[in-house]
Image 1: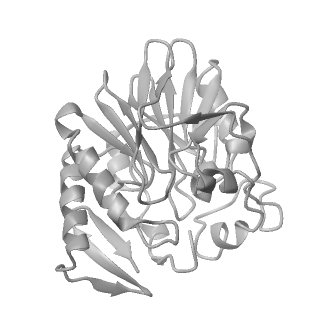
Image 2: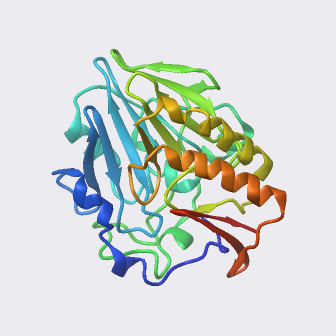
Length: 288
């Protein structure tokens, strides 16, 4: 999120997204979150009423559960996970932008990459409300008690770190950490090899992919996109962190091709505010 982020005034009127009609919705007892069962033991926790349309994922094992990102921190995501499982929950962040760590402080066990970027963002973001709750970014009512004066991304403590190749054992289910820097220095994906699933964070999602921040490295992103594309034969489903929670793996091949084309400098872009946008089938890439 930044002042440069393009805002589409029509976004709220276009909800609900058609893709959700085909998904199994679970009653989460919440007016802020929507929950969908994507696969056995895999739940998407969606925030449709804030412009980012963030999606977190709760993955259940036999001994514990893993919460992949914690969203905006507007609603209490801990209340949702408690409804879905009695297992102890560990958080892992796909990266530490504010829309993915907003609920971290609600949990005791938090994993992340051991980078200066991660540790800095773990200090919290007291001024996040100016962008998160800005006019045009909220669709409908905020949860009771949430206002610009009360909302903040609270500090949290990393209780453990992960790196490329780390494995998170949930008991009967294991997720492998893939370092995929580019969108941020600490970006990662999580691969469930047995169930042929890849959780991509912000390295891929349907929609405009933001690659214009001061913490973005496009050359690194291009390498990470190629790495994900190489996994396509091993995947049945891609689970991104924004907009819709399920995408076909072929999108990763398209993403790698798109990144290479953009990096070549030979592709034409269109202006989008102060940014440049390259459009492809199902997604676009936004750069300075």
